[in-house]
Image 1 (cartoon, helix red, strand yellow):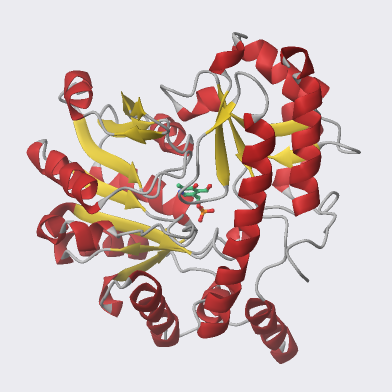
Image 2 (cartoon, protein in one colour):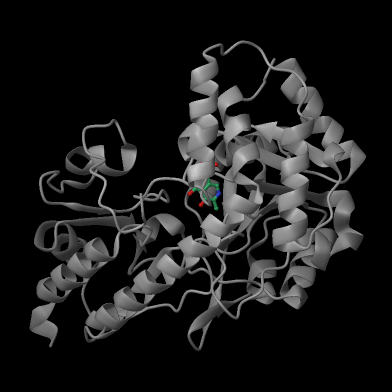
Length: 390
Ligand SMILES: Cc1ncc(COP(=O)(O)O)c(C=O)c1O
């Protein structure tokens, strides 16, 4: 199956599509789902083959020996990100959402705060709230056609109750890839305020041409004693339903804190998830990811050209990820009017910008990990919904 083969996911209990009427008031018959970060195309053939092999074997009992899984992760980090990791640093969680929630649970108490730079993956704040913690939001600054960090503003907003800095690299939304200097500055800020630095790097494989992603551990190794890196194959290979993600923690004390908690919870990851990630992190998987990036590049071009042609609407140029961050503030409309035109007029469900925190008030996030034809259709519908601005 190629990236442009339309797969009808409706009626498969797929959250991206099947919730459209209930959550977005967008019809399932001809609505377009562009919200949550999962892709509409099939995963890599090597991953599907691994599932077939497991199914042919037919026995799904307990598992032992994670060495091939850990070796595959080490190989991937070295070949794709030039990052040498030790297999002993890896701890598997039930997806990165689970790893974020566990990090909040382990390194803070109810009533504590965590610093986040917004707009950012809305679930950071949601997970903090669900755990009785509070997000201290520090807005990123718009400079030219991108976001930059504003540490003075962050410092002004600190309450003294922060225990964590939950960091997203590359940034979801906006696709910003942080430079090594910015990463070092973030780690130094965490050090200055004695914060555990949770670096969520799940989007690290979606790097467009002429861009370079640097892992936090490479940029700021001197801050390893407070660093917790989170990665997964879930977005890269569209296998989020397998709920398999990893902590990568070089510091023995921090590592042991997670390990002990997972042992106490009798937590072990999903066997099929292990098999799929092991198959994904391979030369065949790498080739498939390169092909996927070419496909996403074409979607990014179709989308940006069409969206930027609407007066007052602007799509931030993506350096990474397939999550287009679109600013509607130039239309002069309220958020409700923008949302109504998109959901009711264009019958599209993007992720609501305000959920991403300060800076997202008049924005929407559109997921471009779909077929070219669907992106073209979305652009045509959006142009129609805002045609009075022409
Ligand atoms: C930045 C970020 N972290 C974590 C997640 C959740 O990852 P998982 O599906 O592996 O739980 C997402 C999903 O959109 C994400 O964008």
